[in-house]
Image 1 (cartoon, rainbow, N blue to C red):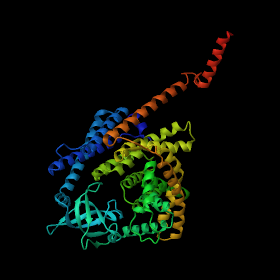
Image 2 (tube, rainbow, N blue to C red):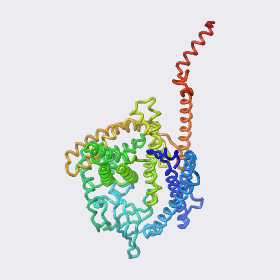
Image 3 (tube, one colour):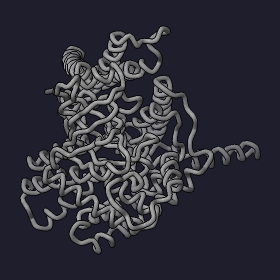
Image 4 (cartoon, one colour):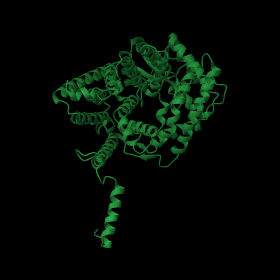
Length: 568
């Protein structure tokens, strides 16, 4: 192994898997796009004027990623034959797994039935996510399910399709995560969202439970319900934000408790959510790696206090990770954080330094092989991009900002800027606007996020057995979320909070080019400053005249001497 690569293997400097992960992601996106185009042709649904720009989105993003791979390999001075061989193999694996998964989904009996027409169907399915408020008018709640049986022409057919179920209020409280139900409703293709199918529950007997949820799901559901009952005693901002910061679901979206308190004011909740989005701190309401980092830090301190063996500490960390992921609302960012956290726990057990970049790349590769549909997930992409930016640039930005800012403030600002470097192009794809006040908003709320998250998690853990103590922790957490609410309402209401931007692939490419241009300019300025301040070769001290005040003083004195005719 060369000395160059030996140096890169220190900590998070091992970049060798990054081109592989990017190539596999690009290949998966391109394969999804190609299969979607083919499937529309097969279904005779291709419009007469072409595919449409929206169909070029995955392919365009794939091209952008491949360009980044080429630039990255050139920057790292990698050996092209080996890099190309591994990247080609990764592209082949990513394409094959994606096409195989899309083909299986295309020929699934439920998908075939939905493509023919929106018809009344009887389906046996298992609920895979907790019930939340509906995002579609006319229904009160929604839940994600996985089919097991669909009745077609009086015959039971096996199915593994995923769908989103929409139901009215009488049936919302009867659906529980992990339980199996016989559902009757209108099956149709989804008009938006990641789920390919919608099941609109209707009929005289649309829902009947056929299997109870497993014991661990029942316990988790009870703990979550107890936690929401505790948060019902908080002010409206706490009822909305404490569950969001703790579990990843806003208080007004949760369905499953019969509250004795007044419901959350819908207009206030919608305005608060919009202000959080415009101020650039909406990511706080999604469970991410921050929860796992805080929990791992507490376990490590506890282990050092008890002088525990590092392997036992690693087992405790891994166990807490699993419990935390199970208690949270399921999400793609939780999946990414859990896998990376388990890799970090394994490194801790072996006494090796954790390599966040390598762990992220292996996580992306493994997830895309097992579940190719994750390549189109905005949640997984945003989570991975934020981690990538923090790993690559947070340290460098912190050192640069440390020259003009206090150390703690420089670290917080560096983390925020680094995370947004790669997430902005993805955010533009979701919504064509730039959050201009995101950095100050994140800096203002950063000191309160950790405490509010920890106290919220403690409230969640104790709500089922000690509700009075859980209420105290929830109250403390709500004081931190109160600061977040005030910051969001203040900055999010500003007319300059967001800047309209070009949408689609073009907008993402423009923001990426703008970031590259600004980065190149900053690198050039930094090098010029270092060159000016660099000491002369072989001589101690700082080069004479490098300080602008000294040079200005000398120029003034020389000018005065020349004008006065003093030649001494």
